[in-house]
Amino acid sequence: MKPLLHPFFILLLLVIISTKNIPTCLCDDDEHYTNCNRTFSCGGSTVSNLKYPFWGGNRDQYCGQPQLTLTCEDRYPKITINSIKYRILLWNDTAQILNVARDDYWNGVCVNDYKNTTLENTPFQYQNSAGLANLTLFYNCPSPPPNLPNTPVSNTCGDKIVYFYVGQPNPVPCTIVVIPIFGTSARLVSGTGVNQALNEGFGLGWTGNYGDCNTCISSGGECGFEGEFKCFCKNGTSSTSCYDIGFFFSFLIITFILDQIPTSCCADDVHYQTCSSSFHCANLKSLSYPFWGSNRPEYCGHPAFKLDCTGKVATFTIMSQTYQLLEVSDSSPTLKVARNDYYNNTCPTILRNTTIGCTLFSYGSDSRNLTLYYDCPSLPFPQPDSFSPQFNCSVNGTQMINYFVMESFIENAESSFSEIFGTCNSRVIVPILESEAKVIETNSTAENLKAALDSGFDVEWDANNTLCDECQNSGGHCGYSPISGEFTCYCRDGSFPSSCKSGE
Ligand SMILES: *[C@@H]1O[C@H](CO)[C@@H](O)[C@H](O)[C@H]1NC(C)=O
Ligand SMILES: *[C@@H]1O[C@H](CO)[C@@H](O)[C@H](O)[C@H]1NC(C)=O
Ligand SMILES: *[C@@H]1O[C@H](CO)[C@@H](O)[C@H](O)[C@H]1NC(C)=O
Ligand SMILES: *[C@@H]1O[C@H](CO)[C@@H](O)[C@H](O)[C@H]1NC(C)=O
Ligand SMILES: *[C@@H]1O[C@H](CO)[C@@H](O)[C@H](O)[C@H]1NC(C)=O
Ligand SMILES: *[C@@H]1O[C@H](CO)[C@@H](O)[C@H](O)[C@H]1NC(C)=O
Ligand SMILES: *[C@@H]1O[C@H](CO)[C@@H](O)[C@H](O)[C@H]1NC(C)=O
Ligand SMILES: *[C@@H]1O[C@H](CO)[C@@H](O)[C@H](O)[C@H]1NC(C)=O
Ligand SMILES: *[C@@H]1O[C@H](CO)[C@@H](O)[C@H](O)[C@H]1NC(C)=O
Ligand SMILES: *[C@@H]1O[C@H](CO)[C@@H](O)[C@H](O)[C@H]1NC(C)=O
Ligand SMILES: *[C@@H]1O[C@H](CO)[C@@H](O)[C@H](O)[C@H]1NC(C)=O
Ligand SMILES: *[C@@H]1O[C@H](CO)[C@@H](O)[C@H](O)[C@H]1NC(C)=O
Image (cartoon, rainbow, N blue to C red; front, side):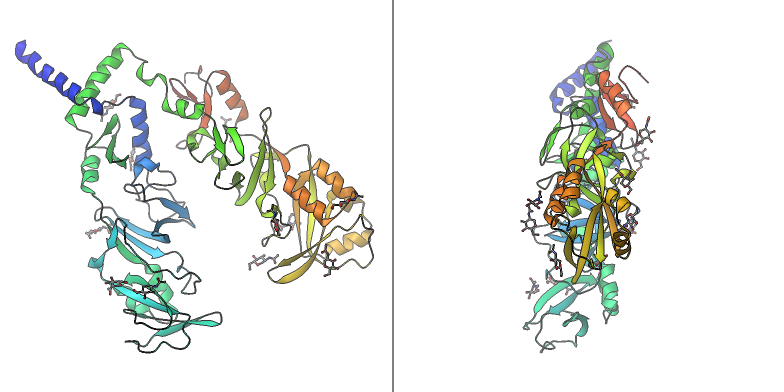
């Protein structure tokens, strides 16, 4: 028996020594693993393998190096390096090479902000193995720049001319911008071919340590970073790999202890804990389901209710239209919202109808429709002072005469009005509050119009409210699973489809 006991005590010692590796709750780590196992998703992008050292979007911050944040725009993953935004064209995770193109030069060389590509103080270096060349651009030159080693090509940008060539800059009285391109793209640099050369981008090598990550991945883990490199395993977090001896045996012991006291470790599911607290967002306090955003994770809210908390007023976007969230009712699923494009502005550049009624929202009983007519002829007859439903806009350099009336007015109006309104170029329907509608009906002034639009309107929302009530009544917190895309009830002992007692 003794030879059998002996190694066991060594293991026990190892476990005690390596207590820092014991996961405090097994459920926590599983989530880190699952989160970092995802690749950065950017609707339809061809670059589909972005993982460590990158984070952003659907990858939490702990999945990557702090400064390597990705964003997704126009189906391109983008990264900002020394305050210049680049589109990511390719990521070779074997060689850690990132091919990028300048986002500001994506549509050509006519730009207003002149910035050189620089890599100082970044974890990147130029990937010279593929051969790079420098494209030098000369802006704001008084005349063709003199004393250049090569003859430059030129393009016009409005009433200005930009000169460029492949090669080093010379001191000339111009604003100079130097952008690397692939050596193989240099032959494209002629009139319009320069756009293609820029869009093919150039290669950057990531100088970080990928060896750690390779070790972690080959042991079945996912790489991450929390002050230092982390390897997230299915059953816990390690600093190197998932086969870490200390970790492995501490796991065994914990499993053993768990068997004795089955519910102690996972008593408070991490989703349950995270979603139990409310959050603040710009002008609004104590928000909870269906809202998320800022530091509240997506799984605590409904996908459509993502808030942007960076401005003075919280905003959210539905069908690519942004709304300000002015008030959230505590007692009923009602919100007061205002169109962002109409805030303190009756002349948006792009005229669009209100989209919010088409989705998870319905207009509140307190809403009335206001119609704005744009680009109209002037009224051939005079109006009384209290009825001047006219406002002027100068959009895209054109002066326009516009009118605003309530829907009820059009129904009862004399045919002369309908005829005039019928010849307007566009009309837009914006809901406003009943109380504001009454003001406009009795006293149509441009000032009252602005006030009505700024006051917003009421909408009722439904984000599986019945399920959420059921969940909350059973002691759970509402959320959505980003993986299944379905309503989820987070309970102390895990996640369930609708209530904590359902036990499914
Ligand atoms: C991790 O990702 C791989 C594919 O990248 C997938 O096959 C695997 O099922 C994922 N594991 C988990 C736990 O999600
Ligand atoms: C990644 O780079 C390595 C070395 O440069 C190369 O051998 C490999 O083919 C590249 N992989 C892809 C997918 O381009
Ligand atoms: C870009 O770099 C060149 C030298 O490489 C310099 O002459 C030029 O002023 C820089 N341009 C800007 C906009 O900083
Ligand atoms: C491009 O210019 C940078 C400085 O702006 C220089 O460090 C680099 O060597 C140049 N590359 C080539 C291929 O000439
Ligand atoms: C993780 O734990 C589960 C049981 O909780 C076990 O089935 C699985 O094999 C473990 N995975 C690893 C990699 O140890
Ligand atoms: C509203 O817009 C006007 C100019 O159109 C501006 O002077 C004013 O400061 C704006 N008010 C607010 C509250 O943003
Ligand atoms: C103003 O110009 C933009 C882009 O050129 C166009 O999309 C928009 O419809 C124009 N707005 C009006 C009111 O004509
Ligand atoms: C808004 O909707 C009305 C009717 O629903 C339509 O006549 C009008 O053209 C729409 N306006 C815009 C800008 O799409
Ligand atoms: C306002 O107009 C929309 C269509 O643009 C309609 O769905 C909605 O029912 C109208 N609201 C009222 C209060 O009439
Ligand atoms: C709009 O412009 C017309 C003529 O250009 C002018 O007579 C009218 O007073 C203006 N209305 C407002 C509200 O500024
Ligand atoms: C109409 O509204 C204006 C503010 O736009 C206000 O100054 C005026 O007193 C109001 N007139 C009446 C009759 O209420
Ligand atoms: C939750 O709501 C969505 C739409 O809002 C609906 O499609 C789905 O069926 C609802 N889920 C359940 C379980 O009722």
